[in-house]
Image 1 (cartoon, rainbow, N blue to C red):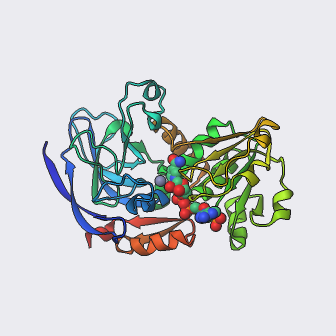
Image 2: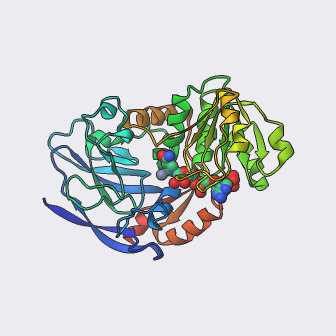
Image 3: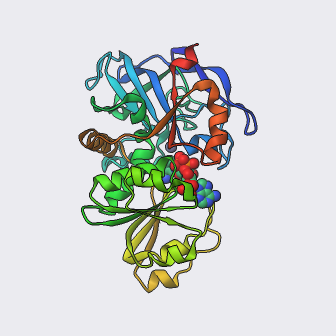
Amino acid sequence: METINVKAFGTTAPEADLAAMSIERRVATPKDVEIEILYCGVCHSDLHTARNDWGGTKYPSVPGHEIVGKVTTVGSEVTKFKTGDVVGIGCIVDSCGTCESCKKNLEQYCLNGFTGTYNGKDRHLGGHTFGGYSEKVVVDESYVLNIPENLDLAAVAPLLCAGITTWSPLRHWNVKEGSKVAVIGLGGLGHMAIKLAKGLGASVTLFSRTPGKTDDAKALGADEIIISTDEAQMKSVRGKFDVIIDTVPYVHDVNPYVATLNISGTLVLVGYLGPLDPMLQTVPLIMGRKSVAASLIGGIAETQEMLDFCGKHNIVSDIEIINMQNINDAYERMLKSDVKYRFVIDMQSLKG
Ligand code: NAP
Ligand code: ZN
């Protein structure tokens, strides 16, 4: 298969810094769209993958799955896009298209395994996929999203992962006008969860470890902030919430949050991957028909639904724009929760 070389930024080992490198992209096939990347958001999953936190990272690793760019070439059979269109790519660039999940527009749960935008199994070139920390990406048009014209292009990028990952559970667990929602952790996912839940008409409480984030959380739309380390504050919201979106990336005790669920309420884990420690207590679940669940990103149709909703309600991410060369520093700051509330890379900087 014919390929082109493009500039990228990635890493060759878990403990190595990210640095400039060159990667191959396929030349657009008849169904493909070639995109010049303008902006790429920085997700905590990028850091987990670059540093092999979850195991299974293939090197060299080029992260990035919050991509906004401009179409530069379309294949002969492409019908939805033309050269010059502004488009988005999220976490999925391929799936089988034929299994029960794909037929239900749930490509993220493809029974044959969806292809992640990075660290996925490349169905065209073999090897693994490379993400958005690069000049260009080539993607089948079925996995390319339309970006609403009224939204700021850099601030829209984080919707492609942080947005859809919080939108999908809010929709699945039927959050609507009057719902009582809580969000755990005010980072990239957390700040989008607040904005989207508010957009759906819910009242929203933020659980945070960080008292210094109170004013920001209010400005983002939170009605109430509970400092999770303060027992009295935690007690004040016992039995309150219909849905809790838990975005914490590392192991933590979920039991104190279960106590804040209403009867039949659901706590949805979207951050931490791994065994819970301390263990989950079942008595409070049984005594209140409560659930602890989890959720992965969202399908392509649902991602478009979320983007259109954001277009209509003028919702974007709060961002800090960085140059590609500052990514290692950005990762360190993300680990310290020192970001308001998503880094977005201006990909022009990769050209310099
Ligand atoms: P982020 O911007 O770093 O935000 C995480 C927030 O969690 C922090 O701002 C902090 O908020 C809180 N936090 C961090 N460390 C903590 C700890 N040790 N204990 C308690 N709270 C802690 O990360 P993100 O980009 O939003 O991603 C969050 C997680 O979701 C990551 O693990 C990422 O890999 C995962 N993710 C999952 C999906 C999915 O499909 N399920 C998709 C994308 C990302 P406070 O200071 O307010 O407490
Ligand atoms: Zn992500």
